Amino acid sequence: MEQIIINGGSPLYGNVSIGGMKNAALPVICACVLNEEACVIDNIPPVSDIETLLEILSTMGASVRRLTKYSVEINCKNLVPCTSPMELANKLRGSSYLLGAEFGRFGKSSVSHPGGCSIGARPLDLHMKAFEALGADCTHRNGRLEVEAENGRPVGSSIYFDKVSVGATANAILASVLADGITTIDNAAREPHIVDLAVFLNACGAIITGAGTSVIKVKGVEKLHGCRYSIIPDMIEAGTYMAAVAATGGRVTVTNVIPKHLEAISSKLEEAGATVTVGDDFVTVESTGKLKGINIVTQPYPGFATDMQAQFGAMLCFAAGTSTITENIFNSRFQYTDELSKMGADIKVDGNHATIIGGAKLSGAPLMSHDLRGGAAMVIAALATEDTSVIEGIDKIERGYHNIVGKLRDLGANIQKKTSYTDEQIRVAFN
Ligand code: EPZ
Image (cartoon, rainbow, N blue to C red; front, top):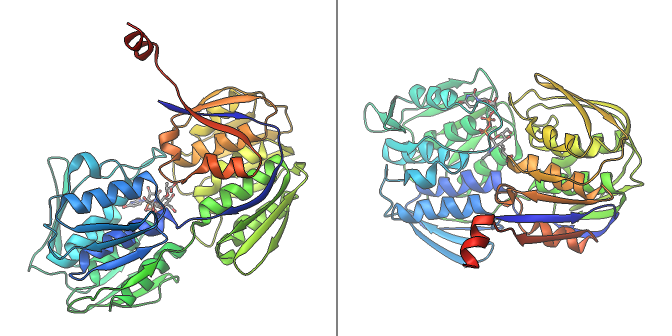
């Protein structure tokens, strides 16, 4: 087991460069399944979710060639559909995009139920609604979801989502790019990574309009051609470092970002008393570390991102006064508060509401990361606490944050990663 050890209490100073967005790269990588020509994807974040998805494609017969740590060439000409290995696909939510991509190209798909962070219910009913609208039968068999077009190919249709869903919107796009006819997706997700997927597919010859709005139109084409494409910067990675310096105090410039994607985050940081200066491709956050309580309500983009909720929850433990968080997207995304309570945080959770009484002096503690963003929240809390904390379960953090220890150390944090051995491992090693 690896753990992160943080001796907190130091302000953060310097520059941090942001990588490609994990949640944009996952659907773009799966979109290569629609293509019989090679695509080169740049600015890929080298995190475990991405590595797992590339391994899945390779196992299915695609050619996956790493050009650099951040660039990969993918050619799915020889990919065999319905062969994604269950033990890999159920490690991440992003494998669900194989459903739309396989169905889109081959008229059929079979993928094990995806994994993903344990943050509440993560059904696929909206995904299946989209596939059925495009003429598919969807069945659950032996732990896999099977999707098959009644007449061998998706048929363009109208899809209405009762609830905004990033994954279902992306899958509806993937499933309709090669469909016979036009598809309209209504009440679509507007996240930047939906736009990124559409821009990538249009660069391959797809005809998608309206991405970034709640109505997306896809005109089916016969086939796609290869292209080279660079993934957008990760707004959640950026926001995580912004929340960290707001909590610890200091001055950090976050580079390689699209400031527009960070507007909700920047606005709430300023409301809490930090100063945010916006450049063309960077934002600088300055904080005395003395914040005031605010209220957070998570919404689909362009609202405040649910993926930033935990990080702000940690930050607000250090703000004077009372803060509230309303989590409208997932029904169990406050697990991290139990860990922060071990540090002395005063947080009361009632359903999808949390009330944080800030200002208490926290103390270090042994912490367990249950999910990606909850783990990031613990890192933020430990950085802002004048004590030593040890965080276990960092494999969950490294699913979405490349080199988080190195980047924070470069900002002046007293942080290190070490391997912790169980008593059994020690006994075996020394006997
Ligand atoms: C994506 O998950 C992200 N994951 C999540 O990020 C992110 O929190 C979420 O979008 C919302 O922005 C990836 O991109 C891999 P949804 P996804 O479908 O697509 C309900 C992270 O930390 N729903 O937008 O699964 C669902 O239960 C991860 O990087 C249905 O009811 O999210 C939730 O309440 C965590 N039926 C709401 O919609 C469905 O068929 C939004 O989920 C699908 C979703």
